[in-house]
Length: 272
Image (cartoon, rainbow, N blue to C red):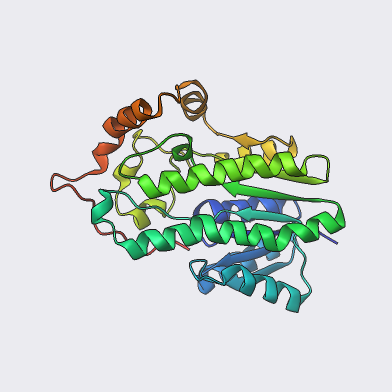
């Protein structure tokens, strides 16, 4: 029996690339997102190309009971998960008062609450089987406060610390936990956030090398990985204290997302 990987936000971007590379490794797939058409097309293609089974679960992760809904459907189909990839997420940017409160609320539901709830739902089964892995997708934004990305960077900081803490809890118990902290990646994230200026360092990579680096790090049981030399240097060498100074320096970098009127274009629905 093939091991099964559940990937959230699997319809595009990093999620679709995780599905592609994991299918090539022989994993069965459970693809989760809101876009049934794109999920089904991806599932059918990967099943045909790699001889694996690919299941589709349509779910909006902003809903409060999203993880419970997913867990119930997994149980009904008799599916167990050996690898959980908490990839789904979106961001907001601009002045905090200009961002719709419900937009930031949904962001936290997807980026934080659903991630924790799914881990709660699926990790006990991994423990019972004595093996499993969790990959949480954070961001280089999680290493420091980021003005004009206040909620996004705080959420990704949570994901980073949550992942590192879980890794220490489950070392020696058969469970690997990796946190992926990429810099800007050319995905629909920037359509959802409303501006490509959100790539504040001015450069992007593509999903393929990011996912390849993540899976290599998971194979080596690393705690976290920051793909790309420039991203890694920024993550490891920049000072983190005093925190108010770090935030002030970050503001000078991130203010470029503001338009002359002080806001960013209206974002689209988050990609899923």
